[in-house]
Image (cartoon, rainbow, N blue to C red; front, side):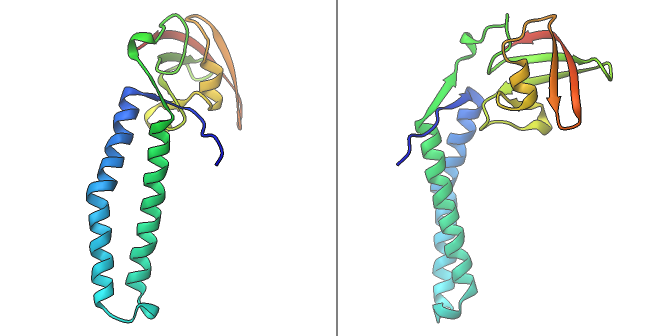
Length: 159
């Protein structure tokens, strides 16, 4: 088996993964087992779409459980106390000024597992996130994106 990549998580991200794993193992497994039991009661499994559907759901759920267990096993949690506010790093909240639109944006820099761009949680591996990593307040950053280049000025860095 290949060695797994280390997963960088914030405390919040760790709690979210642990919560999802607990839900899948306790609640969801019972629900799926009940669906399978009900489908078996319908008889002839060779032509039983409810059974096939429930077994597929079970397989997908078990794959997700294994993924979560592996992610948690390989997790490196960023302690808020270790976050340096002098430079942008994973766990930082960084406020930037979009120089083209004169618009302030606050991003939380997180590991790829926690990324949620619609909520301004961007991965350290994304174009914007990787360009901001290592920057200091006052720096201007050019970020190559599919539409061209965005210019940001780093206004503040916090935990």
